[in-house]
Length: 142
Image (cartoon, rainbow, N blue to C red; front, side, top):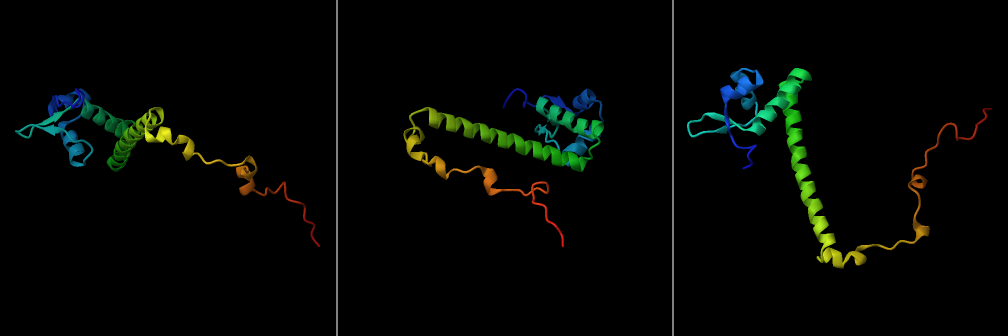
Protein backbone atom coordinates (compact mmCIF):
# COMPACT_ATOMS: atom_id res chain seq x y z
CA UNK A 1 0.00 0.00 0.00
CA UNK A 2 1.44 3.37 -1.00
CA UNK A 3 1.39 6.31 1.35
CA UNK A 4 -1.25 7.96 -0.86
CA UNK A 5 -3.53 4.93 -0.54
CA UNK A 6 -3.23 4.79 3.25
CA UNK A 7 -6.56 5.65 4.91
CA UNK A 8 -6.15 8.75 7.05
CA UNK A 9 -9.22 10.95 7.15
CA UNK A 10 -12.63 10.42 8.71
CA UNK A 11 -15.77 11.45 6.86
CA UNK A 12 -16.21 14.72 8.77
CA UNK A 13 -12.66 15.84 8.03
CA UNK A 14 -12.99 15.09 4.30
CA UNK A 15 -16.37 16.83 4.12
CA UNK A 16 -14.88 19.93 5.77
CA UNK A 17 -11.78 19.84 3.53
CA UNK A 18 -13.94 19.80 0.40
CA UNK A 19 -16.76 22.01 1.62
CA UNK A 20 -19.50 19.40 1.22
CA UNK A 21 -21.93 17.66 3.55
CA UNK A 22 -20.96 14.21 4.90
CA UNK A 23 -24.22 12.89 3.45
CA UNK A 24 -22.88 13.74 -0.02
CA UNK A 25 -19.92 11.44 0.61
CA UNK A 26 -22.28 8.70 1.74
CA UNK A 27 -24.30 9.16 -1.46
CA UNK A 28 -21.16 8.90 -3.61
CA UNK A 29 -20.27 5.69 -1.80
CA UNK A 30 -23.80 4.31 -2.24
CA UNK A 31 -23.61 5.06 -5.99
CA UNK A 32 -20.27 3.23 -6.17
CA UNK A 33 -18.27 6.31 -7.14
CA UNK A 34 -15.93 5.99 -4.16
CA UNK A 35 -14.99 3.14 -1.88
CA UNK A 36 -13.42 4.33 1.39
CA UNK A 37 -11.74 1.90 3.76
CA UNK A 38 -13.51 0.87 6.94
CA UNK A 39 -12.20 0.32 10.44
CA UNK A 40 -13.24 -2.65 12.55
CA UNK A 41 -15.96 -0.42 14.00
CA UNK A 42 -17.19 0.38 10.40
CA UNK A 43 -15.94 3.99 10.49
CA UNK A 44 -15.14 5.31 7.01
CA UNK A 45 -11.52 6.30 6.43
CA UNK A 46 -10.48 8.17 3.30
CA UNK A 47 -7.01 8.16 1.74
CA UNK A 48 -5.39 10.96 -0.25
CA UNK A 49 -6.33 9.04 -3.41
CA UNK A 50 -9.97 8.92 -2.26
CA UNK A 51 -9.93 12.68 -1.66
CA UNK A 52 -8.54 13.27 -5.17
CA UNK A 53 -11.25 11.07 -6.65
CA UNK A 54 -13.92 13.05 -4.77
CA UNK A 55 -12.38 16.26 -6.11
CA UNK A 56 -12.70 14.86 -9.65
CA UNK A 57 -16.34 14.03 -8.99
CA UNK A 58 -16.98 17.53 -7.67
CA UNK A 59 -15.29 19.08 -10.69
CA UNK A 60 -17.46 17.03 -13.03
CA UNK A 61 -20.70 17.82 -11.19
CA UNK A 62 -20.11 21.44 -10.16
CA UNK A 63 -17.92 22.86 -12.90
CA UNK A 64 -18.95 20.79 -15.90
CA UNK A 65 -22.59 20.07 -15.02
CA UNK A 66 -22.36 16.30 -15.36
CA UNK A 67 -25.03 14.33 -13.47
CA UNK A 68 -24.11 11.37 -11.24
CA UNK A 69 -24.95 8.82 -13.95
CA UNK A 70 -22.52 10.59 -16.28
CA UNK A 71 -19.93 10.82 -13.52
CA UNK A 72 -20.21 7.07 -12.99
CA UNK A 73 -19.49 6.43 -16.67
CA UNK A 74 -16.56 8.85 -16.72
CA UNK A 75 -15.04 7.38 -13.55
CA UNK A 76 -15.38 3.79 -14.82
CA UNK A 77 -13.83 4.73 -18.16
CA UNK A 78 -10.95 6.46 -16.39
CA UNK A 79 -10.30 3.40 -14.25
CA UNK A 80 -10.34 1.16 -17.33
CA UNK A 81 -7.93 3.50 -19.10
CA UNK A 82 -5.54 3.38 -16.15
CA UNK A 83 -5.63 -0.43 -16.18
CA UNK A 84 -4.99 -0.48 -19.93
CA UNK A 85 -2.14 2.00 -19.52
CA UNK A 86 -0.49 -0.24 -16.92
CA UNK A 87 -0.94 -3.24 -19.22
CA UNK A 88 0.62 -1.34 -22.12
CA UNK A 89 3.58 -0.30 -19.97
CA UNK A 90 4.08 -3.91 -18.87
CA UNK A 91 3.91 -5.11 -22.47
CA UNK A 92 6.27 -2.38 -23.62
CA UNK A 93 8.80 -3.30 -20.93
CA UNK A 94 8.54 -6.99 -21.88
CA UNK A 95 9.16 -6.18 -25.54
CA UNK A 96 12.16 -3.98 -24.64
CA UNK A 97 13.65 -6.79 -22.57
CA UNK A 98 13.04 -9.44 -25.23
CA UNK A 99 14.41 -7.42 -28.14
CA UNK A 100 17.24 -5.85 -26.18
CA UNK A 101 18.54 -8.96 -24.46
CA UNK A 102 19.63 -12.38 -25.68
CA UNK A 103 16.14 -13.87 -25.45
CA UNK A 104 14.58 -16.02 -28.19
CA UNK A 105 13.01 -13.00 -29.87
CA UNK A 106 16.43 -11.38 -30.28
CA UNK A 107 18.00 -14.57 -31.68
CA UNK A 108 15.18 -15.15 -34.20
CA UNK A 109 14.62 -11.54 -35.22
CA UNK A 110 16.18 -11.97 -38.66
CA UNK A 111 14.10 -15.07 -39.31
CA UNK A 112 10.90 -13.29 -38.28
CA UNK A 113 11.18 -10.64 -40.99
CA UNK A 114 9.46 -11.31 -44.30
CA UNK A 115 11.34 -10.27 -47.40
CA UNK A 116 9.23 -8.54 -50.03
CA UNK A 117 10.41 -7.25 -53.39
CA UNK A 118 9.83 -3.57 -54.05
CA UNK A 119 7.87 -4.36 -57.23
CA UNK A 120 5.13 -6.12 -55.23
CA UNK A 121 4.56 -3.10 -53.00
CA UNK A 122 1.87 -0.61 -54.00
CA UNK A 123 0.71 2.61 -52.48
CA UNK A 124 -2.44 2.34 -50.43
CA UNK A 125 -4.16 4.92 -52.64
CA UNK A 126 -4.14 2.49 -55.59
CA UNK A 127 -6.44 0.16 -53.68
CA UNK A 128 -8.83 2.90 -52.59
CA UNK A 129 -9.16 5.19 -55.57
CA UNK A 130 -11.75 7.87 -55.11
CA UNK A 131 -13.54 9.43 -58.04
CA UNK A 132 -14.05 13.09 -57.41
CA UNK A 133 -16.64 15.05 -59.40
CA UNK A 134 -14.01 17.46 -60.74
CA UNK A 135 -11.85 14.53 -61.97
CA UNK A 136 -14.67 12.71 -63.79
CA UNK A 137 -14.91 13.17 -67.55
CA UNK A 138 -17.67 15.46 -68.72
CA UNK A 139 -20.68 13.57 -69.91
CA UNK A 140 -22.74 15.22 -72.55
CA UNK A 141 -26.43 14.66 -72.63
CA UNK A 142 -28.55 13.78 -75.71
